[in-house]
Length: 171
Image (cartoon, rainbow, N blue to C red; front, side):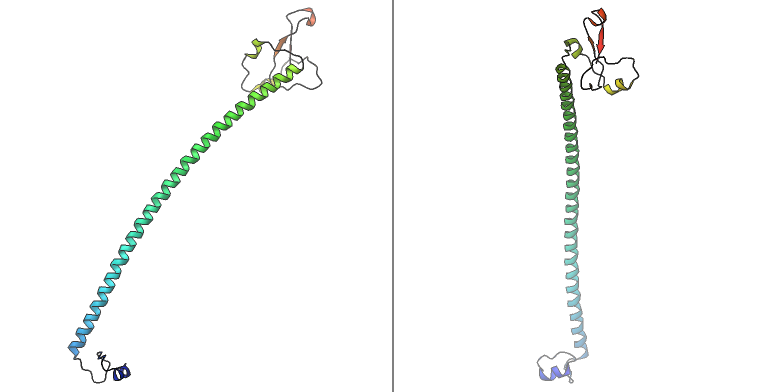
């Protein structure tokens, strides 16, 4: 630094020249002013950083709130979708059950068996397979090329069977 002061004497920075023109009091005053400027700059930077951190914290809280709202909305949408899928599944099950009933009715009619209106209106049990699994002395007496599906026993009057008009057979 001494070499610099010799080349550029106009700088006149304390401690830079062998012949110091500043007194010790001026040097201390200069050092104090520099220190105060550094403290001001440091304080300003700290305040600015604190403000930026506060703003960032507010933005993060807002983003967290938006994320929570989005999660709740997604959960509600998921529940609505599950409810709609459940309803659609029940509707499809009803449609399939109706189609199966129509198919069985068409099959029975194709065998030449007529089911009168009184029997059509009867309720079918919730689980028709339970009837098939119960031990029963009833044996279907209709002989066809294909076996009938075991869904429910239906008793139909067969005129002239065993010479009585009131006898029935089951299918």
